[in-house]
Length: 328
Ligand SMILES: [Zn+2]
Image (cartoon, rainbow, N blue to C red; front, side, top):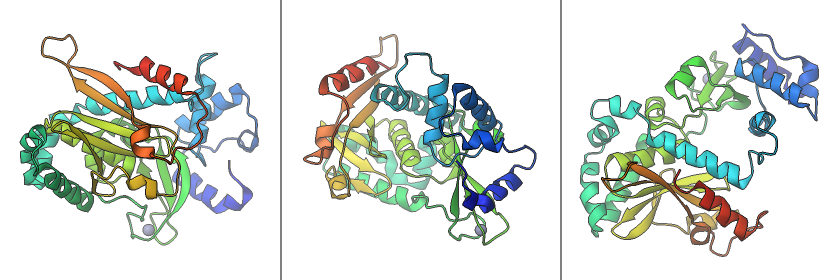
């Protein structure tokens, strides 16, 4: 995981974590680690003394601790379950409600027209789309896509690797799985951290994120405004956005691009699609036992158009896997 040419990076990380010894080099160098080695490495990671060069190593940790016969963590059914759990956590983020006025209060204070969105979206008014464009324009100005400038001096930094969230980061968001570490050679901050949060309360506090953070936050904002139905759309090609129901039509919203109702946007990007799936916590009738029920919808055709790439599983497996997650 660490090559000799990375000595500077390695020493910077050790200096960042002086209180803990680095893992034994022979463990790090192993190319086909046993489960026992993986467990040892996972402990080192959890204690904060192991830096991972890639996110795939986290999947290897999860695979090592999964029960025998369980599908691999990167399989379609496992990812579906993971995304559903993530949306449930976003939806249930209590931190937002503790804030005075909740997320809605925070938003309306900064972007007052947001208060009128509920009526516009529910009625399907022609003024709904311009109002959404105004919201997303404000969003991108307030929360621009984070491109890793050093928080100390603003100079570009180089990516060091992934580390386990610190105690403070884990308390801000117990669902956070990793923090990205960067090295700035221009100033004394040297190594700085970018925790990858999922929960809207933590994202608002941190004030920085990429499409994962901002799509979750936009989803939570629309839910807090009680605009009706909102869903979180995950593209297996590493992008995430949101859809909201305007009248009876689902409208695409991308907070990083400040794009409204441009579902063909991604076909211009240099990529093919495998799966695009929407997750929604749908409000249930007043007398039902649960207030919300999870609903999963395959939107691949809508977004991929003729740019559908090769899939590793059959349409039947896709449909069965989605059916298995319904009601989350
Ligand atoms: Zn710096």
